[in-house]
Image (cartoon, rainbow, N blue to C red; front, side):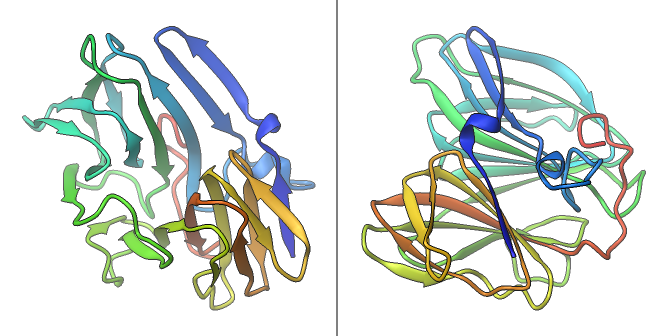
Length: 246
């Protein structure tokens, strides 16, 4: 089964110089009351223009991955970190029992574009920490790259939750199978581009989201396409006590 939600179903909130597009994942599926889906509490496609500041604020009981594709965002937190984040330096903030941070794009810098991914932890009150990871290459051409995952995975950044996160830059006319789900649930988001889901003749484009169950799909790029993919375990426990990822 696949379930596609088109980009025009996203909720847009714009307060210049910040624009966010929120994806109410679960509510797009029939009879679902959860705004998230399994371990994903919230997925936000955001842009911040030069001069934007998100002032110091608290997070609790959520794991927040900042996945930038363009521009630079400066991050400060209550752990003493003060560091630029960009498309070769990613950040995963395991907020746990509580962590404060702020984000800004400096005046005159190019507009920053990112996904901010709020993952529900397996339990509340974990020890807070921040992880940074510098990529060898900005894009993973025509192969899945595991960037973050549960503690049994070989991912360079760790979620304290049963989820795997991959990215991929699929060049025009190339095909690839989705990561093996092993009976779990897949979720795909297209940052840009267009792919055909072979066997379904469905086309997913920029900003579209796809939920996948009980199928192992092949994707074919109709143009150069930038996408991310999650493997989720809907049977595993997770908290809904986060401030933003309820």
